[in-house]
Length: 392
Image 1: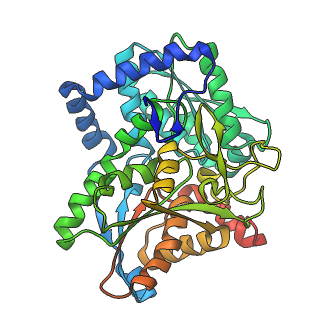
Image 2: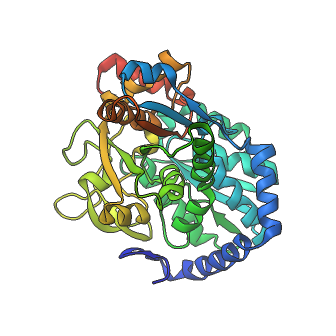
């Protein structure tokens, strides 16, 4: 069925958006199969984003855990500091192809907002980014970056004032201004065709990493690990390995302060299926079925839903989804910074925490590959605040 991963996905949107989604799907399928579009995209990936990003043997982390060899896929080295630019760039080129003049986006940790503002500056689009009050407080440096790049940052005060509310506000804008506006969704969520389109634009991560790993090690890793909020870096990484049955795939969600409703952002581990932001997938709900409040020390994982393809991969048991709490993520942030001279974002710090456990479980001779989806400059205040009160 079109736009579905098993029962998940779909287009649960107001009628006013259906023609825009049909236009987008047609434009994307046409561009995806157009060699000229792909050539232009590849050129910008190389000269503007800085691809290919390397894989890196984390020798001191490996030594620390005294187990499997740990490699990092260095998406933190992308221009703007995270994997988000892979998607924003592709969608900006598509918006230009469609004749749109205005771009909107939502952002939590600010990295997608920065990536969107960056491509809008590059291609001359008007740019509006929606961001919750709480995330603006946590990620004030990225707010400043977006404004310097020429974006209008719209504060969202409703609800928990985080990513869910920012997304809802961006959708309202799109409904109102659908004629000249393209909405660059930042993760593999939302109505069809976004989950497929974002996956296709992010799979460059996994395609590069798989080839690089074979060259470096002469074999594939035993385990590939990535953090999962909406899930774009993870689906981009996992897609290249789905056909390799001997490669275990592990997605790591945010357990926050614990397993109680309202204390975490672990949609796949602690949620159940429902509809959010135009798509049917796993989401966190309270006893009445209302979307639950979430918490994570990491603004980029602080979202109550997840991409529908992840929901399908969970049901298929092809990917194992686990959750790591704030304390373990902050500890991994500090450990990687101190041992490797690489400061990870708090989002992939969750994956690094799990990678350490997996390395010990596999033992020497094992191989673990981690998607280091972004760098942690933006999170220094959050880590300092967490260390100050122990709760984030």
